[in-house]
Length: 268
Image (cartoon, rainbow, N blue to C red; front, side, top):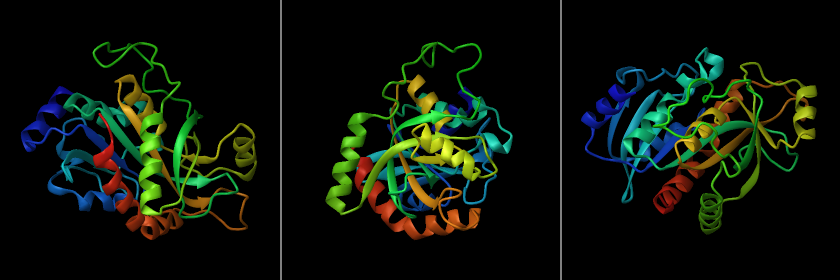
């Protein structure tokens, strides 16, 4: 981890306090960063490569307005064969670089019947069904406590700011609970009925390990899902990753506009 931190520090003089993780098909925001330095993941020691389609696989450090930011265009997933510790390695590097606030985006299936394809949803809480936790094993006290509190895993203050920004921009923004599953197969209709029963509004295959690691390090977290499809059994159609990417393209202008207005206003 120290090697990765030093490598990034050598590549850019900026010291960002806000980090952003861009999910499947949602990478356009990285291209809107000014004064940016782009670092391919494969160049950073220990950094996991992003192999999923729709993940560019580069770290972009630059500015959004006056705010210095570190933007991950793409992420690693457990379903790619990475361990939970490998999946959250980038978050820990960002934390060691000085990032104190993290914005996480993802593509998710809509379980809540009030959602629509292409809608943006703030995550208020999560249900971890991935069978993994990045904090398993010996605890590194330099990163955080053995038993971190998760009662406000998603910052209430950040969500208030996000709702205010969305209202100013005329962007519809829902809020809900995200269920994280392992993947890579999509869920069955029976599994979706189960997830709805236990209180999930959205389902996806990422985000939760990163949020746990960020909270462990004391970061404030905001997470935004793009509803790229309605989950299995809700509509009479098959689910495909192409639909996820297509919806990402459909909402990219809205998401970029939202993030450009939001990120400079987040408190650290």
